Length: 325
Ligand SMILES: CC(C)(COP(=O)(O)OP(=O)(O)OC[C@H]1O[C@@H](n2cnc3c(N)ncnc32)[C@H](O)[C@@H]1OP(=O)(O)O)[C@@H](O)C(=O)NCCC(=O)NCCS
Image (cartoon, rainbow, N blue to C red; front, side, top):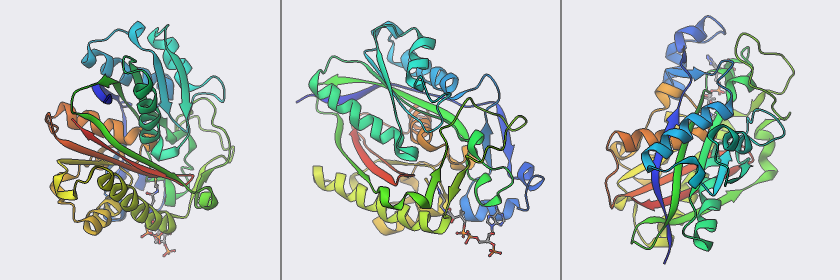
């Protein structure tokens, strides 16, 4: 049986750091409130020249380097994003151009913070059809351009960045073992952004066109915990393994309290949960591939390990993916 394996991972983050202390000067908030309610300390903010496609291209280049592949060997590029540079072309087409991946076809997927697991699921279907394909899967966002910096309820939560992985097929007993995706559009008003984004706008030059992220935080919190629990149980059941068999959980990095509640419900040991949200905040579709790349480069993932990814985001969308590394 052919399975999808990861040949390389990469990530890219803007240089500019926005700390809780910086936010204290912008809105009525405190480091103490943000830290205890979210676990976030810093986030990265893109400036001109660090548009979503640029961050995505940097992350993709690093994944290619690790995979020892050149851009012209890529067959397909899928980018999960809700902050493409433009309404058209897709972010994936701009990445294709920037990389010079002349043989690849390219498309975006909008599944908000679940974008990366949705992209992986689609890539897996192509790999099953043609195991020789080399597919670049990216999650990239510049949500700072869509945050209302006068709204303390949302502006403390989000950050910018990109992560990528290069996948192909194998007949070895490893790779992607299970995946399950869900959506519930009836709840979209609990977390939404009403306009199609345009070119990235940094803090200094942001316009006030009203297309900000709007969120009912408490409701989102509740659904996020329940939904990720459901998705994780589904993929574990598919391959008949238990929570204890998982070596590393790499969840969407939205909020430390969501992850603690999820861990308690499922009985996941906290040391098995990869956390970097303190450094980057919620980077939406980029959060899982950034964390995956950091965990990979830190040697937190060994050959044969079961690695579980899970996400929840606007739509609502949610899902989980299980790999044997
Ligand atoms: C957003 C979130 C941190 C708010 O925490 P909460 O405990 O639910 O807090 P509430 O929204 O009930 O607000 C409590 C109080 O804190 C205030 N508050 C909100 N943001 C604040 C901030 N940054 N600093 C200080 N006070 C703040 C509220 O105005 C409210 O004040 P009030 O009681 O005087 O009205 C929490 O709901 C959450 O994490 N939700 C999920 C968000 C998320 O992860 N979304 C993305 C999913 S992909």
